[in-house]
Amino acid sequence: MMKELLSQLRSVVVSLRLTVLLLALSIVLVFWATLDQVHLGVWAVQQKFFHSLFVFVAVGQIQVPVFPGGYLIGGLLLVNLISAHVYRFKLGWSKAGIWLAHIGLIMLLLGELVSGLVQQDFQMRLDEGETKNYSESLRRFELAVIDETDPAFDEVVAIPESYLSRGTVVQSPKLPFRVVPGTYYANAALQMRSQAPGAPATPATRGMGPQVAVTPLEVTYAENERNTPVSFVELAGPDASLGTWMVSPDIGMPQRFEYAGHKWRIAMRPERHYQPFSLTLVKFTHDIYPGTDIPKNFSSKVRINLADGGSPQEVLIYMNNPLRFAGLTYYQASYDNNSTILQVVRNPSWLVPYIACAAITLGLVIQFMIHLVAFATRRRSP
Image (tube, rainbow, N blue to C red; front, side, top):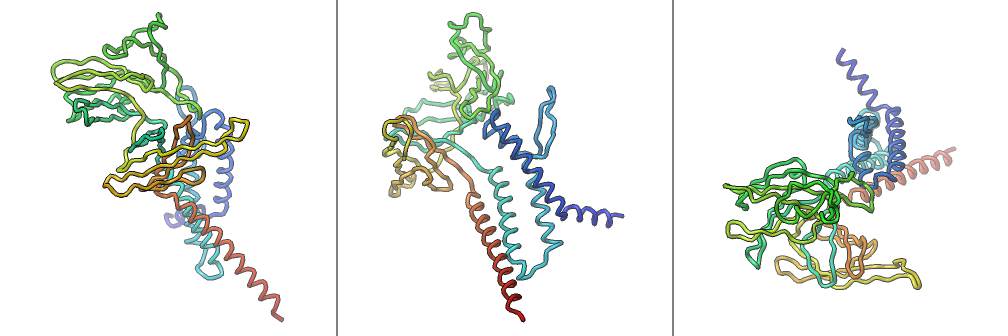
């Protein structure tokens, strides 16, 4: 009974009908995601449709899975393709092109999986002459508690935004107090309380918080909009509370206080990714078409400063000519006056799609040549 059941399962897994069904589901998924992109934006569509096992739809207050996601369809296609090779295809020179093309397809599926799981995207903004050794996340934030007692060095404790949203208490050996997250909003608007006299009071007792009114907003997924999280955190010393602070990226002025003989600063900022080297913007060039404001070309000449004191390198970054260095890729993404905005990507599998497409192309060419030679041979035979 078990042997018969396994045989039926194998027949389904290697079936060409399963391949056609999965490809049809892929077409529907891409079409649906394209329509939904108008409302959600590219990033949210990727997470909802392609970097998931199922596509969820809200039914009341419950998220219900209604369609297979990209990971599930791609995973089943991968299993189907590998199984078909194991059980249906035989090794031989006559099938060499098909084998090579399918190996390329397998690499393409695996490469997309790895990219979806490990790729990181950040952004670096530089003014001319400015030097930075870090890039910032586009969508994730962190709470930075900074000991600025030493004028030559800041001791920073960075707390991920996820800790604030979950209410996780943080006790770091570098801090003489605990950070106790309270009310958290994933997106909110700030307004001076003097301009909103009827606004309810907030839990904040220190810093800018008592002077600011908070209005919660719906989380946005639009490409040209960003969420502004707001959190209220209590700093609890061993003997007494140091007060509750409101933190948000929209608070422009620093919030400072003194405790245990040290000077402190607290702020919510985009999550930072530090590198063991720094970039200096030597010159930013911005060309436009004559008589218009339409950008024709913009490029950034940057200097790579190595932490070990090695000779600095100067590189020109422009459209379709990124800088690849230390496992990171710097693309010329945008600009603002004389400031350049670089997109920073860490993707260990960035070469896989190129290798996979080359293997698929070569496999198809080889298979075509094999059939062409066989056809020509038969034509010459008497």
